[in-house]
Length: 467
Image 1 (cartoon, rainbow, N blue to C red):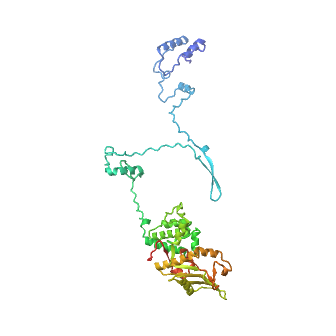
Image 2 (image 1 turned 90 degrees about the vertical axis):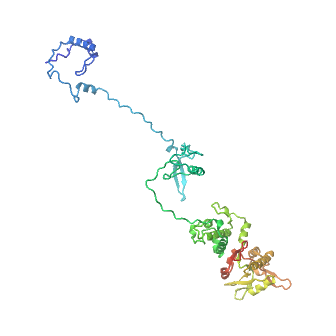
């Protein structure tokens, strides 16, 4: 059975154009407007006969409207040709700009290591223009702040303490667990209980040290440094040396400067005076200024030669001793050296007009050493007499410098040298020229073992017979 609503297959082009421009009617859509309805009805009635109305109860001709889940075949066919919906544009988020520097800004640099190898690394150029971001200023109370700017839950301090607290707040960085004036800070969840650090013994200032004890320590270590020529040479050469005050090994000090720094800043109070005495003794031995504080700049090591000599000659051997050289007279038949004995030297010293001295000639494996010690009384009078004898020999150019000159020109035939032997014009007798000087700390190694053990050092400028 044919559907009477279908149009006739044969129609004109005008009718087809009119049908194409007419709005498409949906079976379940709303009715078209009145004007369009009338026009559509007229065109339809002209083409096809009017269908015979049927009863409303026929479910085959008038099915019920589809439910919400039903599919509209007309809508599905149209949706197949409809472009997909465009996604809703989100607001544009601006990404942060790239950093102003990268690998193209780095410079290749080389570094020479201690073992001679070369390493390469990359770094920004030293003149790279960094943009420094200013730090925010910390809030602080203005000077002269009164009660109106102080928080109500914190009463202001007294006026005399307010300025002090403000200055401390500006200069000190507060910890998070500390409480600052006028500001709340976060307290830790659990308090920390730490054991109090052990109290270190505070070293007394150098000016408060007992001068008598310091002088005794200085003289003691000055003697220890000069007891042997080998030990004195090890310090003068500036190598690794041990600390005589506390016994620390030479491995702990790179040189004498490190030992001086250690002696001036000792680790404990018990050996404070001993270390200061060692510091002064080292400076006198090395020719440095012990009155200046030792620093890494080593400015204290510069001292005039005259002051160096004066500080060394100030330390004399006690009891006062004059060392007489060139007292050997010849050799015996067995090849051993012989010289002036103790009685002969006492007689010669008395003939020169000096009394109170006691001679001691020194002997070795090969006999007389050509050296005699003249020891004077252990008193200021004995020191004065020893200085008189040394000055007498020095005025005749037979002192320390004269002996060094004569020793430098000494040859194999020394018995005929005019610097060592003189001839009496009346009798023609040859006599030895005596050279002598007052013994100081650097002459300690020239003494015999017994005299070295019994001797001590004294300072002429700080002479104290009780030391």
